[in-house]
Length: 358
Image (cartoon, rainbow, N blue to C red; front, top):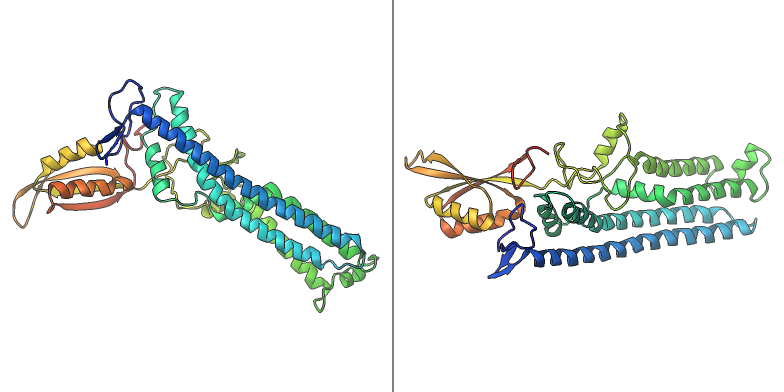
């Protein structure tokens, strides 16, 4: 199996194959058709998870309405049902945050196709960015959540659940005020706030702490912008909060300050890049296979074995993590006794990788 040239031509008249497997060669038109079907599949999957998000919100709204109707319809009903519903709504918020992370996984692939494949067809030089296919392949081979649980929790809270918690908080205070008798003094209000053996001031303190913590998390995560499935507002650099937001972001898809930005000005995914040093007695044949099959550049360095005092060529090849298996297979086929050293690269600039200059 061979991988495409990092910058394959999109000219429909090109005779070069884009992808081959077991003798079958896929032409550019076939490759584009496959990408269109893949895009449609990812759209369907992201829509399905978006509907699941709406279902969780509907559950929270329905249970809140039922709890308030029960608690406020009769003065004899205690406010405990409001507390139970607040805990239930928190559970719904947590479930929805988890679902939102899955939704972002599929929508991030859709966004990558839109910004780096389809948008590239509309503007010169009419070709995808060299790293888009590697980003997409890495997401398919090693799927990981693109956003942190903090961002998912805070975003769903600010979108929907903040208003539910506010309504529940007001209803809780109103129920304490009127049940069982209207509070005409602070002492009577504390008396009404009692819940079994728990004193009223303890219940009020727990209520304020619980709701305050939920609101604090929801508002403190407002600057997290790793999500790609929504149109997000732009926030400036806020002292202290910016450091807090960076600490709360997911680091599964690490970004580099010099990484290219997408159309929405968020950092592109930085894939793991490797540098391989190959010491082989059959260096020329190995280099030819890498150049032909992998379409990767090879640099030969002069080396000398200090034990045998034999001259050896050291091949230096820059690859991505998904190409490493093919590289090892090619080297093993040409020289089973070759010596290979693989090291992670902090940054690789040049054709086929990150552009040296945007």
